[in-house]
Length: 139
Image (cartoon, rainbow, N blue to C red; front, side, top):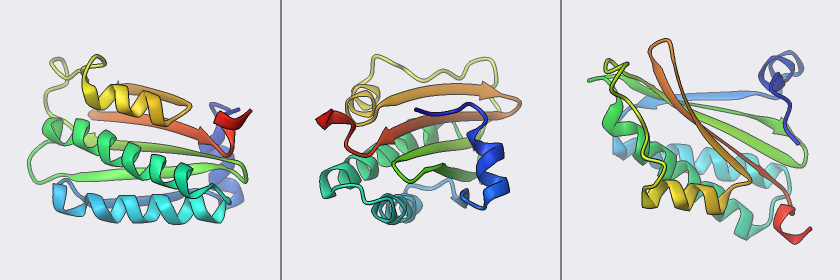
């Protein structure tokens, strides 16, 4: 479904959206709104859009406690007409101690609402990446 090089291809084709907001829970609603808009443009169902909104909210909630002080939360959206990939990330100063609890309720919610979910720590950023295809559960 997803190509690891989707970001490069999406940037060249102008299909990538990146949004940066303060790493503060008050701004998560902005990410949810952008997520819903991009999913709606891909003709996702209302239920699928709600799943993605909740998933972005949960991913952000997992990342914010690890964000360095006064930093920004970045969401990168890509994909094709029938799927959406979202990477939410924050800079962190605790490079060796950072790990997302994949047994947490939030992680289980992410796994249930999306087709794939993963975490990554690289350079000075911690990220959660999720993908969802339109109509995937109905297949």
